[in-house]
Image (cartoon, rainbow, N blue to C red):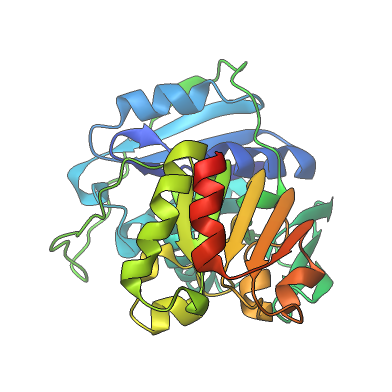
Length: 308
């Protein structure tokens, strides 16, 4: 059976997460089709067609799909699902919004945030905040799956898939796009950054997060935060890294003033190199860090920026 991957895109650009989901689809095996749904998405479809392993790109270009609302996208996927054995999407805000609806409408179970493929019907996924890995098997005819993008290496752009239009236009009377409030930043997007520096409750207040700016600028890093810092109102919740925030796996992760609760570790422990700065030498974060500095962050951060 073929596999349908829901492409994720933002501001006219194909999200890098899609290449990771295609990598997971390649491990399952079979023809891989990518669905690009939106309005004015021709350039996105061309980018998706270049992904290695993709046989076909299906394009649903209509105003009803403009903002990737769950209701019309879910209905569209349900219409197309009969041709496929698997429907995959990234375990992102969009994927988590759309695919549960598809699973419900098709009356099948959903496999969430898989991190490995054992076979076409058997997968591995984290449970208990990442402290255990469950091997799960689905006997459903249609397997609806969200993929933790950080667990799969992205495919290259050596492909040349065909592109075909999807004529189906669903009715959407249940939801309406009102507005979006975007956080503007010159820094890399948190979920795909190669370097991330995050602050925790130890930062003291939101004003002190400015201590991370200079280091982030010099390293080309994204800035994140622990849930404790977000809950305390230091920074907005789109900066949260952890089980209920963004899952990241950068080349370098610097944790500053973060104790290392299991919910935070679940979101960053797959980082290639982890550096922790904390004045409490018993902090759990040191159990997963490659390099640990027991120091007052208010002294260590200015020194680190100066050395950089």
